[in-house]
Image (spheres, one colour):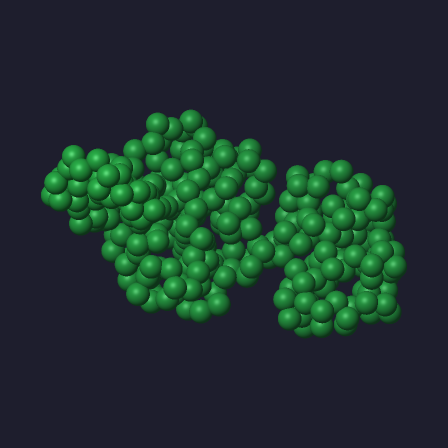
Length: 304
């Protein structure tokens, strides 16, 4: 287990040690979240690296990562705990056959910890040998307001109540990362419990550093052309702009094709690794891809 960083520079180095290339603003808010023990609310477009921050922290700190993937209809029971109903039914059948337990003793056993299924929030609040875990509450914007209200209470005191067992409180709060793709607005009350940071698309310098870290097999010329092309493409009117994940996927696809540099044909043939909507792909195939690529290569040559 690694100690928490004591400076912003140390926080930036910590993320870098896990392969996450951050900027100064992100490193600062990560440092403050760790220093103050506050949840960190990360908002931004899909694919800009919000979820990966939690993975990087867990890896670099040597902590367990516990992920709560949010979705429409998620409720407190599914996030905190559920009863193992199939196991309970088997226990009831066995008790009926054996006939050795009265109703009260059987009920007491059925609602004991033995038949408790711990879900992410409860797991995160229990002690761990390697220290408080990293709790990732991913895509909170996919849930509804009642779950937000529950989460507000749970994160306020870092405790949950199980009727048969009482209140369980975290001895040390988990390192909590909450992400949102902003498909809807999350209530201000939840954001006030957290430190907030908008994770934007990286600039060309940072994205090139990320690509070198995640796809080192790509030759330098290809990497520079990929980044310049993606950066230029994001300025277009797209249904969904490519994120960092798509940039990396595209680079790996091109390397798999033994590419050393971009060509119009290569771009057209591999756009499905970069763009995820047919309307976007259709718009930038053929001559349009060639036009942008010519601009990119001219810009790189002028800046060389």
